[in-house]
Length: 348
Image (cartoon, rainbow, N blue to C red; front, side, top):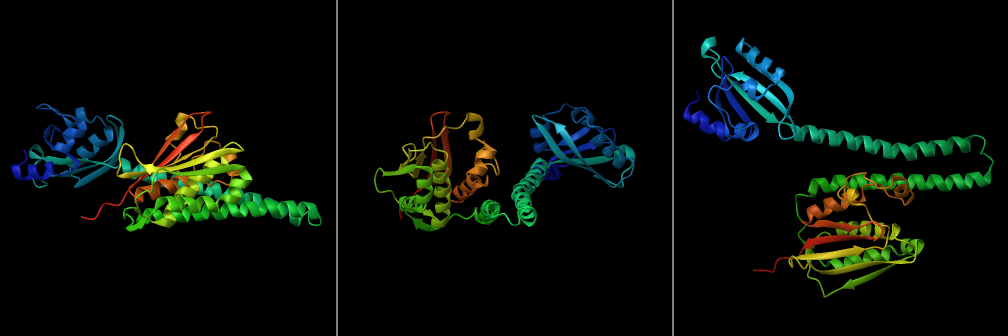
C-alpha cells in the first residue's frame, strides 16, 4: 500500500497513476486515474482495466528486473486517447513477492494533434507555393521556347506571371502575419482605438476593388462608439479581410452594409457587422471558415486572389484583442460577419 504522504503527492498530479503489486493487482490509484479510467473494486487487476498488451508487457518487464519501461499506446476511453505509459519499480530492492510498480499514463493527445497540425500546415504551405511556382516555371519555359518571338503571347504570359508572383507575395505576407500574431496574441493591446474611423479608412482604401466588383459599401453608426483597447494596424487587417471578402463574393450592383453599435446582449462589447448580398454559406462550412487554408470553393477563391489565410488571421487578431468573430449565413440569403470587441473600462 502507499503511505498517506505519498498518496497526497500522487493525488495532486494531473497524470493518471496506479500502483500495482507483483500480480498487477491495483493497490492504489490517484484522482486523475479515477477520472480517466473510472473506479475499481478490491482485487481488480490493471490489465482488466487497461487491456493493452504493450502496457501489460511493459509492467511484466519491470517486475522481471528492468528499472523502467515506457511505451506509447492509444486507448479507447470516451474517445480514442494517446498516452505515454511509464512503469517503474517503487521499491527496487524488495523481493519479487513484495514488488510494487508505479504505472503512469500521461495524455499526449494534444502533442500528437499539434504535430499533426504542424505537418498539415507545412504540407498546405508547400502545396500553395508549389502551384504558382509550377505555373511560373511553365510560362518561363514557354517564353524561352517556341513563344520567344511571339509578342502577343509574351504580353499575355507576363501578365499571368505577375498575377502568380503577386499571389505568392500575398501568401508569404499572410504567413508572416500569422507567425507574428502567434508570438504576441497572449498580450492584449493597450492603446485606445476608435473602431469606426478604422473601418472608414479601410472602405476608402478598398474603393478600386469595390468599383471593380461593382459593389457599394454603406456605413452606419448607431451612435458614437466608445474606444476599445486595440492595435489600429491589426484591426485594419481584420476589417479589410472581412469587407474585401464581402465585396468579392457579393453579387454585382449590390450593397455591403457595415454597422457599428454596442452589442445588445453585452453592452460592454462593440459589435461591427458586415452584411453582404452574396450567395450565402452552407452550415457545414461556417465553423471551419477560420481554419488555415480552408476554402469552400478553392478555384473561385484563387480566382479572387485569396490565400486561404485571411479569416485565420482575423481569428488570431481578435483573440489578441479578447474579442470574437460571429458568422451568420444561409444559402441564397447572404452572410453577416460580426466583430465583437470589448470597450475600454471606465477609469476608477
